[in-house]
Length: 453
Picture 1 (tube, rainbow, N blue to C red):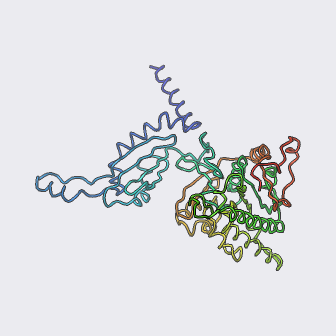
Picture 2: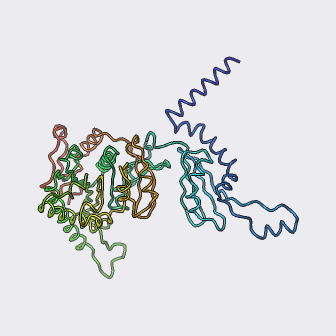
Picture 3: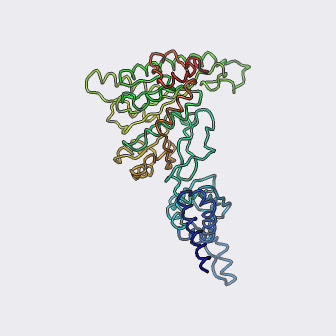
């Protein structure tokens, strides 16, 4: 008997250690079974308690009265599928007549407590079908990107893990321009560093503006086509980018080849429909601290600020078709930065807000999108750097957390792919000096990189 108790204690201790060290293994081994049984047993009572049922049809009530039987119970949504995943459960429901998908979104917190799961996210699949993605444990506590999290196409980078266990991708083809706000030590720079490291292996030109004397982006210079480390150099760099954009548009215009016999699918208005040998290399512009570009202490500074904002607005409005994409970072991004800044913000479809110090800063990112996202951004814990709220202009949002990419990891990745850095004539005066480590490693010259235009 003593041996049996000792064995049970050892097994229990092993399960607890597994739950602490490898929550995914624990979930797939024990948690998913317990959670599935719990959801199926509690389903009808939980739906009724959360107000997610509908009264029986009139004909059923009339039949019950005629046959002198008890009235039928309220009907719950029909379960179409219950699928386990490595992080939780996916419950797909068929709505009853009169139900709304918003009701499930509003009841997500009550469903989370009722089913004893970590998180529940509701989304509408199609008319009459709702999917509940239920997370069994806190996947954002220790972020481990799945092995399958690889770039799913050109300019598509896996940068973080979502609270429902899915991978968050930064897709520049789908969302060309984005805003990234966050307080000091919130993980904003690590998010940007992860983006640069993810784009480094791809055929893309990376351009940086870092007015903190380049301390954030200068270590990644091996993979940067151009870098400006002060506002004076930034205005010249942006002017050169606008000039490059004009040259790309001239190429697109000359290669449209509009004629009566040309199929509609071959007529192009951007670089992506051009033949591969003619297609210019896409450009991603990183602005590390946008407020430094907008600060003005004199009349000359105001003129420079107006030029910078004008160039940024022009790039955000016209750059997508020319293959130019913006990633704007800053602690604040409001009208106090000056004229034209809100016009620039309106062009930034993607929004990411790390921990902020006040609600006003969160409103600058999500105030025109979703009040719920503003509240979620304010509630981010300071002890969880890298946690953020990501959304877009459609109103959808979710919590994410990027893995901690050290500066050494990002530098090594950029150095390893330094030979992919294309040369762009307009940006040649702003090419940063290669680090000594890259020169010693005898990396191929950047001017010979494929895809240069």
